[in-house]
Amino acid sequence: SFGSSGVGSFRPSWHFMLSISGYNCGVMLKSQRKHITFSCLPPGKERIGRDSFYEQEGKVQFVIDAVYAMAHALHNLYQELCPHLSGICPNMEPIPTDKLLQKIRSLSFNGSAGTPVQFNENGDAPGRYDIFQYQRTHAGTTQYNVIGEWVNKLQLNVSAMIWAHNMRKPPYSVCSLPCQPGERKSIVKGSPCCWQCEPCIRYDYQLNETMCKPCAIGYRPNANRTSCVPIPTVKLEWHSPFAAIPVFVAVLGLLTTTFVIGTFIRYNETPIVRASGRELSYVLLMGIFLCYAATFLMIAQPTISVCAFRRIFLGLGMCVSYAALLTKTNRIYRIFEQGKLSVSPPRLISPASQLVITFTLISVQLLGMCVWFGVTPPHTVIDFPELWTQDPKNARGILKCDISDLALICSLSYSILLMVTCTVYAIKTRGVPENFNEAKPIGFTMYTTCIIWLAFIPIFFGTAKSAEKVYIQTTTLTISMSLSASVALGMLYMPKVHIILFHPEQNVQKRKRSFKAVVTAAAMSNKLTGPKASERPNGEVKTELCESLDNSGESCRAEWDGAIGYG
Image (cartoon, rainbow, N blue to C red; front, side, top):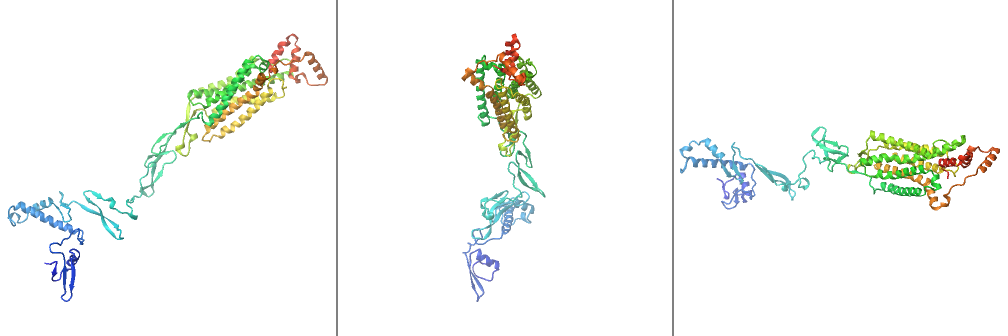
């Protein structure tokens, strides 16, 4: 046997290393005798454990546990087969191997490493594994450190794990990270298990892991693009600058128009009101009033009823105004053209006839409205493409009446035709003496109105691509209508109101020339090859024509006064 202390014969090298490292022995070599002297722990105190300097090879514990398992099984078998006996009894000669195997499988004890040793029904020992990680120590050396174990299940001490660059968080060991909400997987060519995450853009939302789909019209993706939500709607608000300015102009126009109508009604029998052609003057004032009132319908919140009234009054106010002006200018033109050919007045120049002509022209507009109502009933729509922005967060739908640009122009086209025709007659009657009727003020009114609407067209259609198209077009249209009404109101009525209120001395019947003066003037003109009767000032023609009718002279003057508008 080998001792662990004192002087003895030569021991094997493994015992030498074990004594030094495991038993903490000191070594003294006596070279003359070739003996090795050990200075070790006291006898009985030697042990190999976790606190010793000895580091045992990892597989030795299994050998030790196997020997102990056999010993425990034999001991248990002995106690069962040879109770209260000493030595081997006949029941164990020979040893029954089947019973020994049963005893081994039923064992349970703590092994050399302090861990349980037992076997399952198949005779296998339960797996137990220590999990190591190769780590660098603070001293700069490297070693394997236990970071967990597996005994029926995995148990890891994550806090004890160290990764590259001293990171405590494990690195991602995948070729592709999971995609975030609102992103789709784009499979990498040649690597079916790897992908690239691509975000859903603009109005697309994430349908599934690999597909984005556009939201339906009127919807936009939510914040994380996993579904679609309705796009909020807006409308032209009363406090908006696009509405405040037209409303301010319209209110002033309505107040002024109401004041003019009240003044004309109060002084209805005065010469200046009678000379203006009272019937058509009131019709024109009603058209001007409707032009101003249309502003409120254009800005009001769209509903089916508002859309219906908007269609009616959109072109009706202008149609009434220009139908009355066209009837006036046409009457003046026919009177003076007839005077060049005959001494008799033209037909259809009485107030009743003029009203019939005016309302006939207006009925064409009303007929067109009825057709429009029959083909396309009024309703509201929410227009999205006009505010279809790049960023869905800024997208808005505009609540408006279903009136397209083409339908709007068609509704105004008849009024524009009346306006152009009236302008042509105003040009033809521009040479009428200023003492007679309203030919020149009507001419200036129509010239200015044409300029306003020529400016309206490029502004209206030039904003077709603007994000605020509806607002700009509504403002442009209402301002143009109010300006047209203001021009007619200012040029045709304000001078008369000024005379009525501030210069009543001018609101008297004009003095007519006597028949003798007309004859004398006509004779002298004929001798000097002067102008023909038809080319003379209309007052002279009227007086001469009427005086030559003897007894019917007064009724003739009244008819011509009403036709020409002469006081």
